[in-house]
Image (cartoon, rainbow, N blue to C red; front, side, top):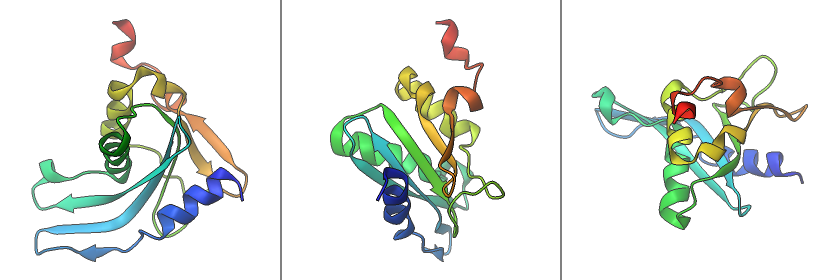
Length: 137
């Protein structure tokens, strides 16, 4: 099995959209990331009535990696809802997630984001977010 399929399978086990409380909904987006030491970490999206409490699956996985290992550099990311990314269904990181990855480690500009599982097509964070403000520092 290749790494993308392994990451997909690990994240897929977490897909479970549900009300966590009357104020919080979660599990509708899942993510797996691979660190530079080839470990896989996962996360789920949490949406709260108070928007400042929201966290995307990508940032949840990144925090999981950092808390578990202290790592800040990410090699690969796969994010999706009920289906794997395809040419018709992409799950690219939002601006907050892109910013978070870049601030954790500028080398994350080379992080690959899967946009099509079947064809193993990726884009880098630099492709998605080419003009990051921190590049001028």
